[in-house]
Length: 193
Image (cartoon, rainbow, N blue to C red):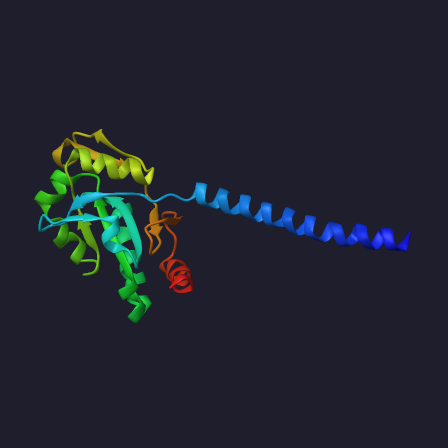
């Protein structure tokens, strides 16, 4: 009887290990399915086309906004600027991007000058309508024009207000909701770098 119990226990160990391995494999597959790699192909101020692949090896902070935004965009860009300062020498491993959801007006008003006022490392991208929409859809964000006769051009842009973090392979890692303090973003980035 004791011999039978020993054999039964010995046989359950490999089965338990195999079962654990299958469960880990399934969890890994679910993580891979949940992750995605947003894409964009948008020109910078000089007209050079920039893509996600170009920033491979760096963490990328991505924000969708527009220069006429009264509060969310400048507040977020101020936070990004503070993060870049607080990272010190590690800032070279992070590329902040501002993708315009109002590209025609932003190019006319000087997107690069607007962003340089916050921090010189923030790269502005402003494509045509189709390329902008493709980026918006790829990141699974929202951007839409809203008519308002009291504003410049007679409209404003309603858009997602989160800051997105892509990993060194271009995979989506997380989003920071609007108002996340720069200290929290910096701490999170330092753990990842």
